[in-house]
Image (cartoon, rainbow, N blue to C red; front, side, top):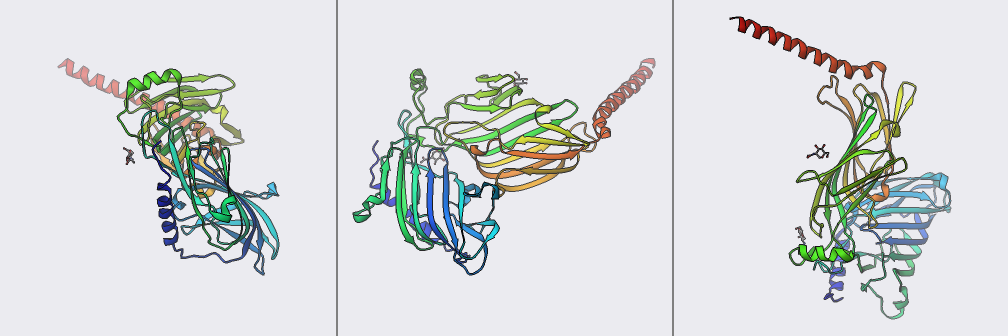
Length: 472
Ligand SMILES: *[C@@H]1O[C@H](CO)[C@@H](O)[C@H](O)[C@H]1NC(C)=O
Ligand SMILES: *[C@@H]1O[C@H](CO)[C@@H](O)[C@H](O)[C@H]1NC(C)=O
């Protein structure tokens, strides 16, 4: 590893100038004080998960129900999955959290906090595209190192009386991290795969302390730029069909030399850790069937699909290992019995499907943009839906009519666009309810039958025309 820590101060300089130039138009009222705050930055996955547990006090003279979370401007576009709850009262949450301006998330407390009263908030969110590989280029069998820049003082619109920040890694190989000098030396502690900054006392609103960590991450940095997930419900076939189109890119370090396939094949014997993506594993619902996997070239046979009453697992391998900077577009699909997801409730139906069923990888997967489209049977009416992913991650949602071959009225589609999600939201549900009558359920077969009949009529007419010709 040829990297020297001399590059770190330069990185920090870049960060602090970015922060200071971000002058916000809106400033939240100084209605709160953070009494005690613990900030946990998990760099264990290929995205950042931040947890802020904070005891807040209302220092305004009147009840308050809006607490503002500060997200640094340079990270704002990459933050998602914000969830807030009361740490002491599970029944109270989740609280609403909506982005305002390009620096704040407004958290609405379900019950206004009385003047002078305190409450413990548990805030979590994710930062995507959070890292920079350093060095940016590595050899095929080199270890990969990533850098994350952040502030050791939690960015806040409020004064913070006491706080500390803990950073967690997937292993203890952390060759570079910002250290403090002189009497502040003990405010940075490394213990195995964890670094603690703090405790810090009495920091004013807006105080920042840029720090940087550089750690080993010998796994792919899998980033899904776009996932299109189509779910098609067929009452007639008793089937729910799934198709997912992924555009995935490895955000890890690029190769410094040309890919050497011989060397790769040789190393495969002892199966070393590699920052290249070699395999993806999709746990599906038990009873899933007919799985397929295609890439830009066509059907790929190097997939394994196991399905029984208890579990279903699709394992796919890219045709070549996906190194840093390389993309991997692919499509998978499968069928499932409608009974797994659909319930009848009088004349209505309730469909309950996972919002995401993407790969489950030890290193994680992040999703920049996801479109879920649920096609309901033709004739479905009075459609209502709700998704249990954080509302701030939903970019758009609509109910539209989608017309396909043999449809007379067109099929109703529920389309939800989401952004900045991670694999931790796998299995969050989307529930769709709709009315569907016997008449509507008969429409499709009648159309099929009707069109077959008109085909016969046409054939008969053509036949008789030909007959006339032949008589000539
Ligand atoms: C892929 O394979 C499946 C089943 O083996 C087949 O039904 C399908 O037509 C193939 N698709 C392509 C694009 O070759
Ligand atoms: C890594 O590869 C990608 C894709 O080819 C390219 O866009 C990017 O600039 C490369 N990064 C470096 C540091 O060379």
